[in-house]
Image (cartoon, rainbow, N blue to C red; front, top):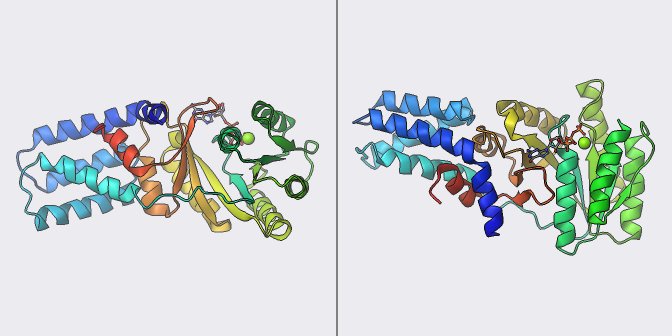
Length: 304
Ligand SMILES: Nc1nc2c(ncn2[C@@H]2O[C@H](COP(=O)(O)OP(=O)(O)OP(=O)(O)O)[C@@H](O)[C@H]2O)c(=O)[nH]1
Ligand SMILES: [Mg+2]
């Protein structure tokens, strides 16, 4: 666990540096708390990819707290800001219990890290003693199926595959049958991130979820959306589009390592109302961990 925590602290290095130096520089230039200070803080949050709506929400709360608590010392702003951000992040423990049987449909645009995250999740679940079946329902490219097969071989998980360009719904259908006959605890389905157009992609995802609902009603079924932290605000827009067509139950935030845009997680929690369930901090099989809000907030501001 300490290792996990250190990985998160390390991966948030750039985000932390940006937030800390921004905050230090602002707070050192002001002797009293005024509107200009709030404006600069808001701009700093926007630059850290917290997003304009969320940054403005945070500033509003900060203003009213300063008034209500009669705060006059500029140095106290740091504590208030960290407290408010922690409150947003800490929207309750995300549910990652996954009772047996569960079925997870992993969605997201091209290249965000769906297949890699499925490899990591499979490994994580298997290390908890769970039996996992993986559906290679991204049939768009043969390479995508082979990429998933390598992860499954490493973990020793069964993967169900069909030919390239075959119907993804048929893969999910067969995978459900396999998961049932093997009494698997968890079925995880990979999906394509790219189709000729957005409408086709969304229709296909709906169809896949329908197969799970009709063929596997006894399973706890959920859609997890993968977002790439390096895309910042773009990720929020992707999430809004996916949210329109599927009931997204959680986010896997990838590529937190090496980006200064870690603040995006605050906007995800505040604006989308979708809990972040897992964060990924690298390309290795164990670079995934359940999201812990307090630890994350601490790592983001360096008070660890
Ligand atoms: N640094 C870093 N790289 C990651 C992480 N997760 C995934 N990647 C890399 O991102 C690239 C794309 O990952 P994939 O898992 O293939 O993404 P995908 O969403 O399945 O992509 P498509 O199947 O093409 O839609 C790969 O090079 C991964 O190694 C992460 O947490 N950190
Ligand atoms: Mg993939």
